[in-house]
Image (cartoon, rainbow, N blue to C red; front, side, top):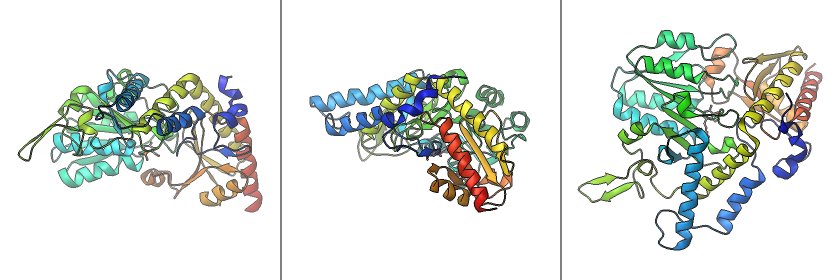
Length: 404
Ligand SMILES: Cc1ncc(COP(=O)(O)O)c(C=O)c1O
């Protein structure tokens, strides 16, 4: 399929100043490079319009507050939230999941309640639930994967019981690129009275997402994987869930009234945003959303799907390469080269100006299921094109020459 993005690599030196000519950046699943409008928005915010938010009585601060809240409204519209008040700014997906685990889980889960995760989750959708288990004695169940590396929703449906209070799954796997049928997962969770938390870190940069249409109860993502700054991310939750949740952290901004006898809290989302926030991060996130929407998520998805197909076909023809994950994975291809450790693959590729990720990708239980200690992973973004896939293939031919 031909998309507007097919011509993008020609523009990328202008749009993405941190990508030098000849460098194949294939690590977008770790973090995306930043487009010029995001860099400009951050520079403008620090260099021209900077002030604190929510407190200042002076015009500059009032203007910055408007910009900060406009970014929240932009996020809400981008993911189909019902209102900006359903958007809680956090540091990233990791903090969002910890917030839900400690605040919602710590309040509403009781000893013996069960939650269901999957074998392919990122550590940030495993460890926060283990910390909660240490506190509340909940039980954690793990859904298996299908042979081609998707979360097995038949198994999810069979495993769920009325004891399950939460299902927490990745929308797109950061290792395999497998895309979850969120609607079906939501129905399965809701059929037993459980909530569904979706880790949208890898989905939001590569698929159109509408949290309400998907039927999710919590949805989380990080700004830096969406071409925005680090240190800003989003927790979306249904308003009745946020209303019922106690604060996660205490401090300035999140209160209604404070006295030594008793403190009352602000309504959501302010209740969950203690301290001076990442003001400029929010503005950068706004610019990032404008940028991806100027291209279109459908176009980005089509572009990345085409690159994945090209990559999988090319790597298969190298015949000493094992491919992981489904054929229709979204923007991410994990692989292994027979007899060569993924770190060596990554190092040799780097010598040829190809940047991939090698390791367990913060998904050690998935590595165990795949029966490998690590994989090599190429992941795509709007700035990649067929030229990057060719550079990867040439690099892998070099790996084979070096290792015989
Ligand atoms: C699927 C998934 N979930 C969660 C995370 C954690 O994101 P962050 O480190 O930005 O909080 C990542 C980051 O790699 C991810 O890929």
